[in-house]
Length: 517
Image (cartoon, rainbow, N blue to C red; front, top):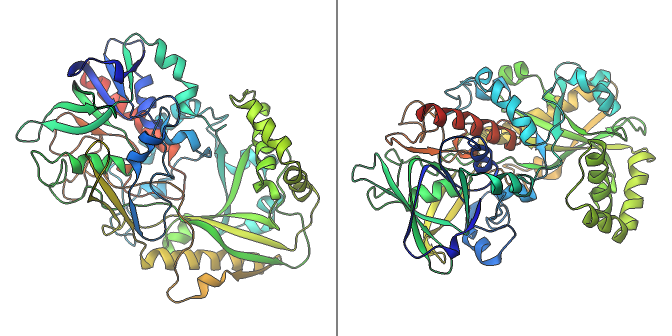
Protein backbone atom coordinates (compact mmCIF):
# COMPACT_ATOMS: atom_id res chain seq x y z
CA UNK A 1 0.00 0.00 0.00
CA UNK A 2 1.05 3.63 -0.52
CA UNK A 3 1.10 5.75 2.64
CA UNK A 4 1.60 9.51 2.94
CA UNK A 5 4.02 9.79 5.86
CA UNK A 6 2.78 13.32 6.52
CA UNK A 7 -0.46 11.75 7.77
CA UNK A 8 1.26 9.65 10.43
CA UNK A 9 0.87 10.69 14.07
CA UNK A 10 3.98 12.36 15.49
CA UNK A 11 6.57 9.88 16.84
CA UNK A 12 4.94 6.88 15.15
CA UNK A 13 7.02 3.70 15.47
CA UNK A 14 6.88 1.44 12.40
CA UNK A 15 8.01 -2.17 12.65
CA UNK A 16 9.08 -4.29 9.70
CA UNK A 17 11.18 -7.31 8.90
CA UNK A 18 12.99 -5.42 6.13
CA UNK A 19 13.26 -1.67 5.64
CA UNK A 20 14.43 -0.38 2.27
CA UNK A 21 15.50 3.26 2.12
CA UNK A 22 15.04 4.64 -1.39
CA UNK A 23 12.34 4.01 -3.97
CA UNK A 24 14.48 4.04 -7.11
CA UNK A 25 15.56 1.20 -9.40
CA UNK A 26 17.38 -0.75 -6.68
CA UNK A 27 14.80 -0.23 -3.94
CA UNK A 28 11.77 -1.08 -6.08
CA UNK A 29 13.48 -4.13 -7.60
CA UNK A 30 14.25 -5.47 -4.12
CA UNK A 31 10.82 -4.65 -2.67
CA UNK A 32 8.96 -6.42 -5.49
CA UNK A 33 10.76 -9.66 -4.67
CA UNK A 34 8.95 -9.85 -1.32
CA UNK A 35 5.42 -9.15 -2.55
CA UNK A 36 3.04 -11.91 -1.52
CA UNK A 37 5.46 -13.42 0.98
CA UNK A 38 5.31 -13.61 4.74
CA UNK A 39 7.78 -10.82 5.51
CA UNK A 40 6.72 -7.29 6.36
CA UNK A 41 8.55 -4.80 4.15
CA UNK A 42 8.71 -1.02 4.46
CA UNK A 43 9.87 0.92 1.39
CA UNK A 44 10.81 4.47 2.42
CA UNK A 45 10.73 7.08 -0.35
CA UNK A 46 11.81 10.69 0.21
CA UNK A 47 9.45 12.12 -2.40
CA UNK A 48 5.91 11.58 -3.56
CA UNK A 49 4.51 10.36 -6.85
CA UNK A 50 5.67 13.41 -8.82
CA UNK A 51 8.45 15.97 -8.85
CA UNK A 52 8.51 18.43 -5.93
CA UNK A 53 10.85 21.44 -5.72
CA UNK A 54 11.32 21.36 -1.95
CA UNK A 55 12.14 17.65 -1.91
CA UNK A 56 14.48 17.98 -4.88
CA UNK A 57 16.35 20.74 -3.04
CA UNK A 58 17.58 18.10 -0.58
CA UNK A 59 19.90 16.95 -3.38
CA UNK A 60 21.69 20.30 -3.78
CA UNK A 61 25.45 20.07 -3.23
CA UNK A 62 28.81 21.30 -4.48
CA UNK A 63 30.74 19.94 -7.47
CA UNK A 64 34.49 20.41 -7.87
CA UNK A 65 37.22 18.68 -9.88
CA UNK A 66 36.30 17.32 -13.30
CA UNK A 67 33.11 18.95 -14.60
CA UNK A 68 29.97 17.12 -13.52
CA UNK A 69 26.36 18.16 -13.76
CA UNK A 70 24.81 19.71 -10.63
CA UNK A 71 23.84 17.11 -8.05
CA UNK A 72 20.22 18.25 -7.98
CA UNK A 73 20.02 17.99 -11.80
CA UNK A 74 21.57 14.54 -12.24
CA UNK A 75 19.18 12.80 -9.81
CA UNK A 76 15.44 12.79 -9.13
CA UNK A 77 13.84 12.40 -5.72
CA UNK A 78 10.37 10.86 -6.06
CA UNK A 79 9.00 7.34 -6.48
CA UNK A 80 11.03 5.69 -9.23
CA UNK A 81 14.07 7.84 -8.44
CA UNK A 82 16.41 8.70 -11.26
CA UNK A 83 14.72 6.11 -13.49
CA UNK A 84 12.24 8.96 -14.04
CA UNK A 85 14.73 10.60 -16.43
CA UNK A 86 16.79 7.56 -17.37
CA UNK A 87 17.60 7.17 -21.08
CA UNK A 88 17.12 3.38 -21.02
CA UNK A 89 20.51 2.05 -22.20
CA UNK A 90 21.17 -1.46 -20.90
CA UNK A 91 24.08 -3.86 -21.04
CA UNK A 92 25.52 -6.28 -18.49
CA UNK A 93 29.07 -5.91 -17.33
CA UNK A 94 31.62 -8.13 -19.07
CA UNK A 95 33.82 -10.71 -17.38
CA UNK A 96 36.77 -8.38 -18.00
CA UNK A 97 35.05 -5.69 -15.92
CA UNK A 98 34.90 -7.87 -12.80
CA UNK A 99 38.32 -9.50 -13.07
CA UNK A 100 41.35 -8.02 -11.31
CA UNK A 101 43.51 -6.13 -13.81
CA UNK A 102 47.08 -5.59 -12.60
CA UNK A 103 47.40 -2.36 -14.60
CA UNK A 104 44.23 -0.88 -13.05
CA UNK A 105 44.77 0.01 -9.38
CA UNK A 106 42.00 -1.13 -6.99
CA UNK A 107 40.33 -3.29 -9.67
CA UNK A 108 38.61 -6.63 -9.19
CA UNK A 109 35.26 -7.67 -7.75
CA UNK A 110 34.89 -10.33 -5.02
CA UNK A 111 32.19 -12.04 -7.13
CA UNK A 112 32.35 -13.53 -10.61
CA UNK A 113 30.52 -12.56 -13.76
CA UNK A 114 29.10 -16.09 -14.02
CA UNK A 115 27.52 -15.75 -10.57
CA UNK A 116 25.57 -12.72 -11.82
CA UNK A 117 24.13 -14.49 -14.88
CA UNK A 118 20.86 -15.69 -13.25
CA UNK A 119 20.24 -12.23 -11.80
CA UNK A 120 20.88 -10.52 -15.13
CA UNK A 121 18.31 -12.85 -16.70
CA UNK A 122 15.77 -11.90 -14.03
CA UNK A 123 16.59 -8.20 -14.35
CA UNK A 124 15.69 -7.98 -18.04
CA UNK A 125 11.90 -8.25 -17.66
CA UNK A 126 12.00 -5.79 -14.76
CA UNK A 127 13.32 -3.21 -17.23
CA UNK A 128 10.99 -4.38 -20.04
CA UNK A 129 13.82 -5.54 -22.29
CA UNK A 130 13.05 -7.76 -25.27
CA UNK A 131 16.02 -10.13 -24.91
CA UNK A 132 18.97 -11.03 -22.71
CA UNK A 133 21.11 -11.85 -25.76
CA UNK A 134 23.98 -9.41 -26.43
CA UNK A 135 25.84 -11.45 -29.04
CA UNK A 136 26.44 -9.28 -32.12
CA UNK A 137 25.62 -12.23 -34.39
CA UNK A 138 22.05 -12.18 -33.05
CA UNK A 139 21.52 -8.57 -34.09
CA UNK A 140 23.16 -8.18 -37.50
CA UNK A 141 19.89 -7.10 -39.10
CA UNK A 142 19.67 -4.26 -36.58
CA UNK A 143 23.17 -2.92 -37.22
CA UNK A 144 24.35 -0.04 -39.38
CA UNK A 145 26.48 -1.48 -42.22
CA UNK A 146 29.74 -0.28 -40.66
CA UNK A 147 29.33 -2.85 -37.89
CA UNK A 148 29.11 -5.78 -40.32
CA UNK A 149 31.89 -4.46 -42.57
CA UNK A 150 35.56 -5.51 -42.66
CA UNK A 151 36.50 -2.59 -40.41
CA UNK A 152 34.98 -4.48 -37.47
CA UNK A 153 37.49 -7.29 -37.62
CA UNK A 154 39.98 -7.60 -34.76
CA UNK A 155 40.81 -5.55 -32.82
CA UNK A 156 37.47 -3.75 -33.23
CA UNK A 157 34.13 -5.35 -32.44
CA UNK A 158 30.48 -4.32 -32.32
CA UNK A 159 29.07 -3.90 -28.81
CA UNK A 160 25.32 -4.25 -28.27
CA UNK A 161 23.31 -2.04 -25.93
CA UNK A 162 19.60 -2.72 -25.55
CA UNK A 163 17.01 -0.02 -25.01
CA UNK A 164 14.50 -0.14 -22.20
CA UNK A 165 11.35 1.86 -23.17
CA UNK A 166 12.76 3.40 -20.76
CA UNK A 167 10.99 1.89 -17.76
CA UNK A 168 9.96 4.47 -15.16
CA UNK A 169 9.87 2.06 -12.25
CA UNK A 170 7.72 4.25 -10.03
CA UNK A 171 4.85 4.44 -12.50
CA UNK A 172 5.39 1.00 -14.08
CA UNK A 173 5.06 -0.79 -10.73
CA UNK A 174 2.97 1.68 -8.73
CA UNK A 175 -0.23 -0.38 -8.82
CA UNK A 176 1.66 -3.54 -7.86
CA UNK A 177 3.29 -1.78 -4.90
CA UNK A 178 0.00 -0.23 -3.82
CA UNK A 179 -1.88 -3.53 -3.87
CA UNK A 180 0.73 -5.57 -1.96
CA UNK A 181 -0.63 -6.61 1.44
CA UNK A 182 2.77 -7.18 3.06
CA UNK A 183 4.51 -4.11 1.61
CA UNK A 184 4.04 -0.53 2.78
CA UNK A 185 5.48 2.29 0.66
CA UNK A 186 5.96 5.38 2.81
CA UNK A 187 6.06 8.51 0.65
CA UNK A 188 7.57 11.82 1.79
CA UNK A 189 9.74 9.81 4.23
CA UNK A 190 13.31 11.10 4.64
CA UNK A 191 16.02 9.22 6.49
CA UNK A 192 17.91 11.59 8.79
CA UNK A 193 20.00 9.11 10.78
CA UNK A 194 20.81 5.42 10.98
CA UNK A 195 20.77 4.88 14.75
CA UNK A 196 22.93 2.00 16.00
CA UNK A 197 23.98 0.41 19.25
CA UNK A 198 27.09 1.78 20.95
CA UNK A 199 29.37 -0.60 19.10
CA UNK A 200 27.83 0.31 15.71
CA UNK A 201 27.30 -3.38 14.97
CA UNK A 202 23.51 -3.28 14.90
CA UNK A 203 21.01 -0.81 13.45
CA UNK A 204 18.49 -0.09 16.23
CA UNK A 205 16.16 2.11 14.21
CA UNK A 206 15.94 4.62 11.39
CA UNK A 207 15.19 8.22 12.31
CA UNK A 208 12.76 9.57 9.72
CA UNK A 209 11.37 13.04 9.01
CA UNK A 210 8.96 14.80 6.68
CA UNK A 211 9.63 18.30 5.40
CA UNK A 212 6.63 19.54 7.42
CA UNK A 213 8.57 18.71 10.61
CA UNK A 214 6.85 15.42 11.42
CA UNK A 215 9.20 12.76 12.85
CA UNK A 216 8.86 8.99 13.17
CA UNK A 217 11.02 5.89 13.48
CA UNK A 218 11.34 2.59 11.66
CA UNK A 219 12.62 -0.58 13.32
CA UNK A 220 13.57 -3.52 11.14
CA UNK A 221 15.53 -6.74 11.42
CA UNK A 222 17.43 -5.82 8.27
CA UNK A 223 17.94 -2.44 6.62
CA UNK A 224 18.86 -1.77 2.99
CA UNK A 225 20.25 1.60 1.96
CA UNK A 226 19.31 2.14 -1.71
CA UNK A 227 19.52 5.89 -2.28
CA UNK A 228 22.11 6.16 -5.06
CA UNK A 229 25.85 6.51 -5.51
CA UNK A 230 26.14 9.89 -3.80
CA UNK A 231 23.38 9.67 -1.21
CA UNK A 232 24.35 6.23 0.13
CA UNK A 233 27.73 7.66 1.11
CA UNK A 234 26.17 10.86 2.46
CA UNK A 235 23.78 9.03 4.78
CA UNK A 236 26.56 6.81 6.16
CA UNK A 237 28.75 9.85 6.79
CA UNK A 238 25.90 11.80 8.42
CA UNK A 239 25.11 8.90 10.78
CA UNK A 240 28.01 9.80 13.05
CA UNK A 241 26.54 9.79 16.56
CA UNK A 242 28.30 6.55 17.57
CA UNK A 243 31.08 6.60 14.96
CA UNK A 244 32.56 10.05 14.46
CA UNK A 245 33.71 9.31 10.90
CA UNK A 246 30.35 7.79 9.96
CA UNK A 247 29.06 4.24 9.73
CA UNK A 248 31.14 1.72 7.81
CA UNK A 249 33.99 4.21 7.66
CA UNK A 250 36.56 2.68 9.97
CA UNK A 251 39.10 2.67 7.13
CA UNK A 252 38.16 6.05 5.62
CA UNK A 253 36.63 4.50 2.50
CA UNK A 254 33.05 5.79 2.52
CA UNK A 255 32.63 8.31 -0.30
CA UNK A 256 35.94 7.46 -1.98
CA UNK A 257 36.48 5.90 -5.44
CA UNK A 258 33.69 7.91 -7.08
CA UNK A 259 33.38 7.16 -10.80
CA UNK A 260 31.21 8.26 -13.71
CA UNK A 261 31.40 7.69 -17.46
CA UNK A 262 32.87 10.56 -19.47
CA UNK A 263 30.88 10.74 -22.70
CA UNK A 264 31.72 13.31 -25.36
CA UNK A 265 32.53 13.70 -29.08
CA UNK A 266 36.27 13.01 -29.23
CA UNK A 267 37.21 12.45 -32.88
CA UNK A 268 35.99 12.18 -36.45
CA UNK A 269 36.70 9.72 -39.24
CA UNK A 270 37.22 11.55 -42.55
CA UNK A 271 35.76 9.06 -45.02
CA UNK A 272 37.53 8.42 -48.31
CA UNK A 273 34.19 8.97 -50.03
CA UNK A 274 30.66 9.96 -48.89
CA UNK A 275 28.86 6.97 -47.46
CA UNK A 276 25.75 5.87 -45.61
CA UNK A 277 27.73 3.16 -43.85
CA UNK A 278 26.81 4.41 -40.37
CA UNK A 279 23.09 4.75 -41.09
CA UNK A 280 21.02 2.59 -38.76
CA UNK A 281 18.09 0.48 -40.01
CA UNK A 282 14.69 2.13 -39.72
CA UNK A 283 13.40 -0.53 -37.34
CA UNK A 284 16.40 -0.49 -35.00
CA UNK A 285 15.55 -1.25 -31.35
CA UNK A 286 19.13 -1.56 -30.10
CA UNK A 287 22.19 0.65 -30.07
CA UNK A 288 25.50 -0.58 -31.47
CA UNK A 289 28.82 0.90 -30.44
CA UNK A 290 32.38 0.16 -31.45
CA UNK A 291 34.54 -1.54 -28.84
CA UNK A 292 38.01 -3.03 -28.65
CA UNK A 293 38.94 -6.65 -28.01
CA UNK A 294 39.59 -7.08 -24.25
CA UNK A 295 42.77 -9.01 -25.10
CA UNK A 296 44.11 -5.90 -26.86
CA UNK A 297 43.12 -3.72 -23.92
CA UNK A 298 44.98 -6.10 -21.63
CA UNK A 299 48.07 -6.20 -23.84
CA UNK A 300 48.19 -2.41 -24.07
CA UNK A 301 47.15 -1.95 -20.41
CA UNK A 302 44.11 0.17 -21.21
CA UNK A 303 40.77 0.85 -19.57
CA UNK A 304 37.51 -0.32 -21.17
CA UNK A 305 36.18 1.78 -24.04
CA UNK A 306 33.33 2.08 -26.51
CA UNK A 307 32.42 4.77 -28.98
CA UNK A 308 29.36 5.59 -31.02
CA UNK A 309 30.00 5.87 -34.76
CA UNK A 310 27.61 8.54 -36.03
CA UNK A 311 27.10 10.33 -39.36
CA UNK A 312 28.16 13.98 -39.44
CA UNK A 313 26.16 16.05 -39.55
CA UNK A 314 24.55 13.74 -36.99
CA UNK A 315 20.89 12.99 -37.52
CA UNK A 316 18.95 15.96 -36.26
CA UNK A 317 17.25 13.22 -34.31
CA UNK A 318 18.72 15.00 -31.33
CA UNK A 319 15.97 17.54 -32.01
CA UNK A 320 13.06 17.06 -29.61
CA UNK A 321 10.48 16.20 -32.27
CA UNK A 322 12.54 13.49 -33.92
CA UNK A 323 13.62 11.99 -30.58
CA UNK A 324 9.96 11.77 -29.49
CA UNK A 325 8.97 10.10 -32.78
CA UNK A 326 11.87 7.65 -32.64
CA UNK A 327 11.15 6.58 -29.05
CA UNK A 328 7.43 6.33 -29.70
CA UNK A 329 8.07 4.07 -32.70
CA UNK A 330 10.47 1.86 -30.76
CA UNK A 331 7.97 1.33 -27.95
CA UNK A 332 5.05 0.55 -30.24
CA UNK A 333 7.19 -1.92 -32.18
CA UNK A 334 7.76 -3.79 -28.91
CA UNK A 335 4.06 -3.77 -28.10
CA UNK A 336 4.52 -1.26 -25.26
CA UNK A 337 1.93 1.51 -25.04
CA UNK A 338 3.74 4.57 -23.61
CA UNK A 339 2.24 6.21 -20.54
CA UNK A 340 2.99 9.63 -22.04
CA UNK A 341 1.66 8.91 -25.56
CA UNK A 342 -0.14 12.24 -25.94
CA UNK A 343 2.86 14.16 -24.64
CA UNK A 344 5.18 12.55 -27.18
CA UNK A 345 2.76 13.15 -30.02
CA UNK A 346 2.51 16.77 -28.90
CA UNK A 347 6.30 17.10 -29.01
CA UNK A 348 6.38 15.72 -32.56
CA UNK A 349 3.74 18.20 -33.73
CA UNK A 350 5.31 21.13 -31.90
CA UNK A 351 8.70 20.50 -33.55
CA UNK A 352 7.81 19.57 -37.12
CA UNK A 353 10.97 21.24 -38.47
CA UNK A 354 13.18 19.13 -36.22
CA UNK A 355 11.17 16.00 -37.00
CA UNK A 356 11.48 16.59 -40.75
CA UNK A 357 15.20 17.42 -40.77
CA UNK A 358 15.93 14.48 -38.52
CA UNK A 359 14.02 12.16 -40.86
CA UNK A 360 15.94 13.45 -43.90
CA UNK A 361 19.38 13.16 -42.32
CA UNK A 362 18.51 9.77 -40.88
CA UNK A 363 17.43 8.17 -44.16
CA UNK A 364 18.78 10.19 -47.10
CA UNK A 365 21.98 12.13 -46.29
CA UNK A 366 25.37 10.71 -47.34
CA UNK A 367 27.91 12.26 -44.97
CA UNK A 368 31.63 12.55 -45.54
CA UNK A 369 32.47 12.35 -41.84
CA UNK A 370 31.76 9.96 -39.00
CA UNK A 371 31.70 11.30 -35.47
CA UNK A 372 33.16 9.20 -32.63
CA UNK A 373 31.34 9.94 -29.38
CA UNK A 374 33.16 8.05 -26.65
CA UNK A 375 31.73 6.42 -23.53
CA UNK A 376 34.63 5.34 -21.37
CA UNK A 377 35.55 3.62 -18.15
CA UNK A 378 37.61 5.55 -15.61
CA UNK A 379 39.87 3.96 -13.03
CA UNK A 380 38.90 3.73 -9.35
CA UNK A 381 40.64 6.65 -7.64
CA UNK A 382 40.55 7.11 -3.85
CA UNK A 383 41.01 10.87 -4.28
CA UNK A 384 37.79 11.07 -6.30
CA UNK A 385 35.22 11.32 -3.56
CA UNK A 386 32.05 12.52 -1.86
CA UNK A 387 32.50 14.43 1.42
CA UNK A 388 30.28 16.41 3.77
CA UNK A 389 30.31 20.21 3.85
CA UNK A 390 29.14 22.57 6.59
CA UNK A 391 26.03 23.75 4.76
CA UNK A 392 22.88 21.89 5.80
CA UNK A 393 19.61 21.09 4.06
CA UNK A 394 16.06 21.67 5.28
CA UNK A 395 16.22 18.49 7.39
CA UNK A 396 19.45 19.52 9.09
CA UNK A 397 21.70 17.07 7.23
CA UNK A 398 25.07 18.18 5.92
CA UNK A 399 25.11 18.70 2.18
CA UNK A 400 27.87 17.08 0.13
CA UNK A 401 30.75 18.03 -2.10
CA UNK A 402 31.50 15.83 -5.11
CA UNK A 403 35.15 16.02 -6.16
CA UNK A 404 35.43 13.92 -9.33
CA UNK A 405 39.09 13.43 -10.27
CA UNK A 406 40.41 11.68 -13.35
CA UNK A 407 43.79 9.98 -13.58
CA UNK A 408 46.59 9.80 -16.11
CA UNK A 409 45.48 6.24 -16.92
CA UNK A 410 42.05 7.61 -17.90
CA UNK A 411 43.62 10.08 -20.32
CA UNK A 412 46.19 7.68 -21.74
CA UNK A 413 43.52 5.03 -22.32
CA UNK A 414 41.14 7.40 -24.08
CA UNK A 415 43.74 8.66 -26.53
CA UNK A 416 45.25 5.24 -27.24
CA UNK A 417 41.86 3.57 -27.71
CA UNK A 418 40.93 6.22 -30.27
CA UNK A 419 44.23 5.67 -32.07
CA UNK A 420 43.44 1.94 -32.30
CA UNK A 421 40.03 2.72 -33.81
CA UNK A 422 41.57 5.17 -36.27
CA UNK A 423 44.27 2.71 -37.32
CA UNK A 424 41.64 0.07 -38.12
CA UNK A 425 39.58 2.46 -40.26
CA UNK A 426 42.73 3.58 -42.09
CA UNK A 427 44.20 0.12 -42.64
CA UNK A 428 40.94 -1.11 -44.15
CA UNK A 429 40.56 1.79 -46.55
CA UNK A 430 37.62 3.61 -44.97
CA UNK A 431 39.21 6.89 -43.94
CA UNK A 432 41.48 8.60 -41.44
CA UNK A 433 41.13 9.71 -37.84
CA UNK A 434 41.10 13.33 -36.73
CA UNK A 435 41.22 13.88 -32.97
CA UNK A 436 39.23 16.69 -31.38
CA UNK A 437 41.31 19.77 -30.56
CA UNK A 438 40.96 19.25 -26.80
CA UNK A 439 42.68 15.87 -27.09
CA UNK A 440 45.78 17.54 -28.54
CA UNK A 441 46.39 19.64 -25.44
CA UNK A 442 48.94 18.55 -22.83
CA UNK A 443 47.57 17.64 -20.39
CA UNK A 444 44.02 17.55 -21.72
CA UNK A 445 40.79 17.80 -19.75
CA UNK A 446 37.81 15.71 -20.83
CA UNK A 447 34.89 18.05 -21.56
CA UNK A 448 31.27 17.39 -20.72
CA UNK A 449 29.47 16.57 -17.50
CA UNK A 450 29.70 12.81 -17.24
CA UNK A 451 26.71 10.52 -17.71
CA UNK A 452 24.92 10.89 -14.35
CA UNK A 453 26.30 7.45 -13.41
CA UNK A 454 27.35 7.74 -9.77
CA UNK A 455 29.46 4.70 -8.99
CA UNK A 456 31.86 3.32 -6.41
CA UNK A 457 31.45 5.26 -3.14
CA UNK A 458 30.67 2.21 -0.94
CA UNK A 459 32.69 -0.34 -2.88
CA UNK A 460 32.46 -4.11 -2.45
CA UNK A 461 35.39 -6.13 -1.12
CA UNK A 462 35.96 -9.17 1.08
CA UNK A 463 38.52 -7.09 3.00
CA UNK A 464 37.20 -4.21 5.15
CA UNK A 465 40.48 -2.40 4.50
CA UNK A 466 39.63 -2.10 0.80
CA UNK A 467 35.83 -1.97 0.76
CA UNK A 468 32.78 -0.72 2.63
CA UNK A 469 30.54 -3.76 1.99
CA UNK A 470 31.25 -7.46 1.62
CA UNK A 471 30.22 -9.71 -1.28
CA UNK A 472 26.69 -9.90 0.17
CA UNK A 473 26.50 -6.08 0.19
CA UNK A 474 26.52 -6.05 4.00
CA UNK A 475 28.42 -3.16 5.58
CA UNK A 476 31.61 -4.53 7.12
CA UNK A 477 31.37 -4.76 10.90
CA UNK A 478 27.57 -4.43 10.96
CA UNK A 479 25.08 -7.27 11.31
CA UNK A 480 21.98 -5.88 9.65
CA UNK A 481 22.85 -2.97 7.34
CA UNK A 482 23.10 -3.61 3.60
CA UNK A 483 23.69 -1.32 0.63
CA UNK A 484 22.17 -1.62 -2.84
CA UNK A 485 22.99 0.26 -6.02
CA UNK A 486 25.97 1.31 -8.09
CA UNK A 487 27.82 2.66 -5.06
CA UNK A 488 28.95 -0.93 -4.36
CA UNK A 489 30.62 -1.36 -7.79
CA UNK A 490 34.44 -1.66 -7.35
CA UNK A 491 34.89 -0.78 -11.05
CA UNK A 492 32.43 0.53 -13.62
CA UNK A 493 33.36 -0.89 -17.03
CA UNK A 494 31.77 0.97 -19.94
CA UNK A 495 28.21 -0.36 -19.55
CA UNK A 496 25.48 1.89 -18.19
CA UNK A 497 24.82 0.80 -14.59
CA UNK A 498 21.03 0.38 -14.31
CA UNK A 499 20.81 -3.25 -15.46
CA UNK A 500 23.55 -4.25 -13.02
CA UNK A 501 21.92 -2.20 -10.25
CA UNK A 502 18.72 -4.22 -10.69
CA UNK A 503 20.60 -7.54 -10.98
CA UNK A 504 22.54 -6.90 -7.77
CA UNK A 505 19.30 -5.83 -6.09
CA UNK A 506 17.67 -9.15 -6.99
CA UNK A 507 20.76 -10.95 -5.70
CA UNK A 508 20.54 -9.05 -2.41
CA UNK A 509 16.82 -9.86 -2.13
CA UNK A 510 17.63 -13.58 -2.42
CA UNK A 511 20.26 -13.22 0.30
CA UNK A 512 17.83 -11.44 2.63
CA UNK A 513 15.26 -14.18 2.06
CA UNK A 514 17.87 -16.75 3.10
CA UNK A 515 18.49 -14.84 6.34
CA UNK A 516 14.78 -14.99 7.16
CA UNK A 517 14.31 -18.63 6.15
